[in-house]
Each structure stands twice: as C-alpha cells, then as structure tokens.
Image 1 (cartoon, protein in one colour):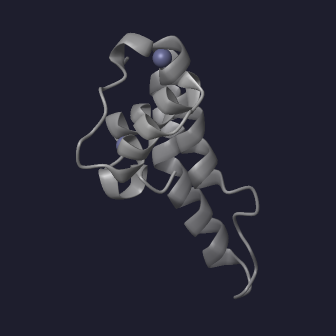
Image 2: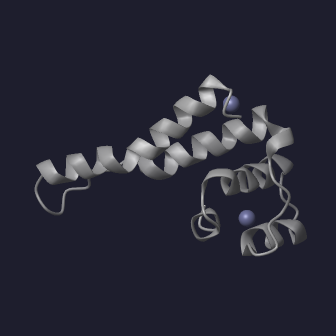
Image 3: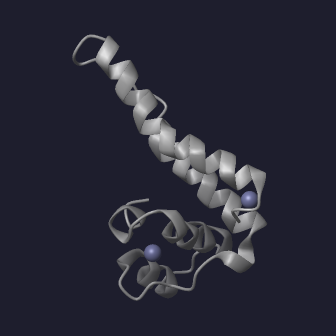
Amino acid sequence: MWSCQECTDLYKAMKQAPEVVDAARAESEPGVDCDPFDTVVSSQIHLARHIATRHTAEVPAMDQGCDRCKSDMTREMPVVLVLEHRARHVFAPPSIAGLL
Ligand SMILES: [Zn+2]
Ligand SMILES: [Zn+2]
C-alpha cells in the first residue's frame, strides 16, 4: 500500500490532523470546538476505507486480541465494514482500532 500515492496522501493527512486541530485550538477561545468535523477520526476512516476497497489483499486477518474483530466474526456484518475495521490495524494500535 505504501507504493500507492493515495495511501501516502491519506496517511499524511491522518498524521497531520491532530496538529492541525491543535493549532486551531491554540488560537481560539477555550471551549470552542475546533474539530467540529472530527478531522482526526474521519481521516482514519478515509484511509481504512481506501485500504479495505483498494488493497483488500493487504487487509490483515482478524486480531485475536481485538474485541471488535472477534465480535465482527459473530455478528452478521457487511464484509466491507469488517474489512474496514481490520484495515485500521495496519496503521492504528489495537487500543484505537477497537474504538473505531
Ligand atoms: Zn492505496
Ligand atoms: Zn480489530
């Protein structure tokens, strides 16, 4: 996936998202929601969806240590959503992947 320009761009956007949000937060009044569009979360979703649909062969198998992976196996989930979640394991630690 790292030879893919779109993956690289999406990954960079995901990595930069917290900095962009922090910069906005530093410049505004306390209590203002500087990330109304959930930039950080949505940038992770964009990358996961791209990997799930374009790089399906690179999506890892279910992670035995991830509750979300295990529950996906017992529920009737659309395949694309299962792949999208597992794709997050490629770039997010299990503690974060399980929340998405
Ligand atoms: Zn790609
Ligand atoms: Zn998982």
